[in-house]
Image 1: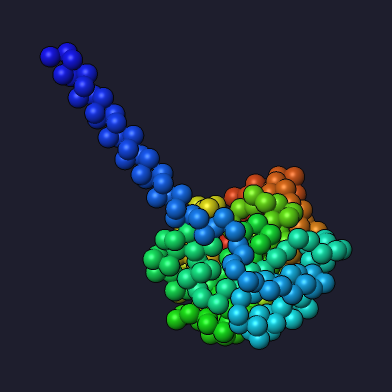
Image 2: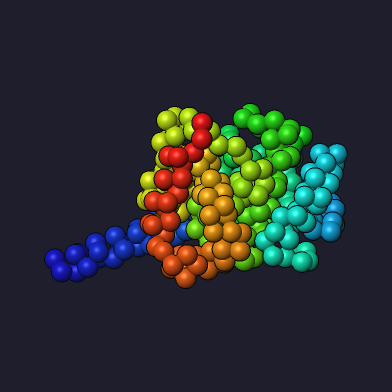
Length: 261
């Protein structure tokens, strides 16, 4: 009886090991596309501030390159850089390829039609404007590159920066989206907990892309740009403002509630 029980336990352990091994293998296979951001036969354009790698859609890639290289210098200098950083942009002819470079083979299966670009530290991945996907246009993809470039340069300053701050900076520096008081009625001001999230889906769902840049606007107008960049670097609210992050949040909420129509 004892021997039978021991053999049964061994079989269970072996089955569990096999299952775990298969799962680990599937995870490994899934992430194979992320091992290298380059695809076969990519060409490169080297600029003053950025490098652009692209596949076959050369005309669109050159359009993105010229726009990105001409605009990045202003952003870099505003962030305190006097020279080019190792920022590389990878433009993929198909949205599915871009998504796989971030999430692996499962990327295109997630149904993220809106997901056209991202950054991985100082590397920017972008869907070619020539094939923008179902949810976007040529110009959407072209101009989205600057948003991701801001993320890339900020990652040099603070690679572990909180989502709310880096997205706020990217929105503010790349296009400075206007804000209207009616957005508060339509979406509601994100809660303090929302501003602390590390989940990009939660950030989007709470209205982060609508409100986060106003947080930077408020800090810049109230405390000055030097304080903003110091916060980006340290995330130490007590040191930078002599106030807690919750106190600054409450000030920002008051600022929004008093925002002109």
